[in-house]
Each structure stands twice: as C-alpha cells, then as structure tokens.
Length: 288
Image 1 (cartoon, rainbow, N blue to C red):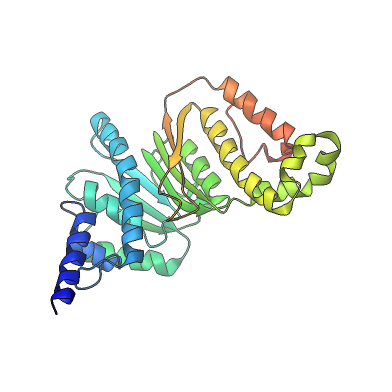
Image 2 (image 1 turned 30 degrees about the vertical axis):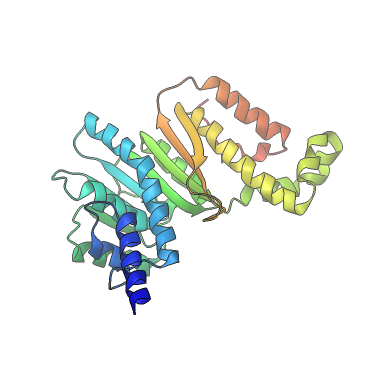
C-alpha cells in the first residue's frame, strides 16, 4: 500500500515538474498530454517536453516582436492537432488584450473542426484555424498580408518549402522550422544519378539507395538555409530534442536581418549545379 502511495506521489511530482507555471491543466487534459486525473504517461511526457522545449526557442522571438509593436501575428503550418499553437497561446497570448492572433493551417478538416471547438471551449478567442494546404495559404485572403512569425513543426516533404515561400511573401521577421520526410531532392538525385556518376566522383556519396535518402535529406536542409540567407535572413540550426525522442529533430530558426544576399545565392546555385539539381532552382528560388 505504501509503495502504491509513494509511486502516486512521485508521478504527481514529476507531472508538476514538467508543467510550466500558469500552464492550463484543462488544456493539457484536452490535448491528452495529461490524463483526466492529472497524470503524465511516458508518451505524453515526451510530447510535452518537445513542445515546451520548442517554446523556449520561440518565446524570445515573441518578446522581440512585442517590443516593436503590440499585436503579434503568428502562423503555424501543418498544425495537426495544434499542440504547438495551443501551448503558445496558453503560455504567451492568452493574457494579451490586443489584436494578436495565432493561425493554425491544416488540411484535415476534422482536426480543424476539433481545434475550433477546443479554442471556443477554452475561451481562446485569438486563435483561427483554416482548412488549407500550406501552398493554398500563400494566396489565401483569409490570412493577413504581413505576419511576424511562421512555424512549421514536422511539415512533411515540400510543405516546409511552401511554409518558407509563405513566410517570404508575408515578410515574416522570424521562421521556426522542424523539417520532416524530405523526399523531393532525393528523388531528383536518384533520377540523375547515372549521368552524374560519369562526370562527378562526388556522386559516390549518394550512389546507394540508403545514402541517397539520407544525403538527400541533409542537402534539402542545407539548400533551405542557403535560400533563407539569400533572402537576407540570419540562420541558426540546432537540435530540438535528443535523439532518444525523435530522428526528426533538426530545428532551423531564421531571423530577418537584411543581410547581404549575393554570396549565399551564388553558393546555392553552385550546390544545385554541382549535385545535378539545377532543375530545382524554382523550388529554392532566390531574390537575385
């Protein structure tokens, strides 16, 4: 009996330790991060740590925007169940009495409906959920002409590139990206492999299919970073979480600084030409 009580007390202590001060217990239960009796299981603890870890990177960006103007416009692409959007709103936006708003972009209508219902139930009026693809959102009139920060957490394959395109068009000051399942570059590498082997010994790096996939994923993010720099952004790349949680843990944070564009644009084009990816210039477009 004492062992059971001790385990229960320990579980509650651990749950309390993982939850930030002022964080809505009701929200965490609605997101199934906490059980109905306020406990955390191993999977939910992992999710909570991931989102809270990401919040540590985003909070300083929000505060920097806050110093410049009152209302903050944030767009979360590939929102899914909107874990990130709800956590951000709960920890930063809900006490603001201005025009600040979080937009969640998601293609699955049932998730959009559930997110709208949850926002209404929690009285989070500054959240909007739209049933759009990331590509569709670029031209949608349902979103503001200018936004401050764009997030894309595990937006699969080219959805991350669409999120970058969206952010560039909306003149976003910050982008926070966790890319996922990059397959497009790998498919082009595979298609042009035979021709590349003849003229470039570097092709040995991705000659085998497994290496093609891994190298393609790595190159995709390198090209994204060069593209962002070619549009005047300062780029930092780090890990979101440890390898024990997720293999998709590369975090790209881009801050617009109006930096020189020519050199990174030249580097981007050189990489595309060297690797036989010239046909992808439209995907990784620059301002030059």
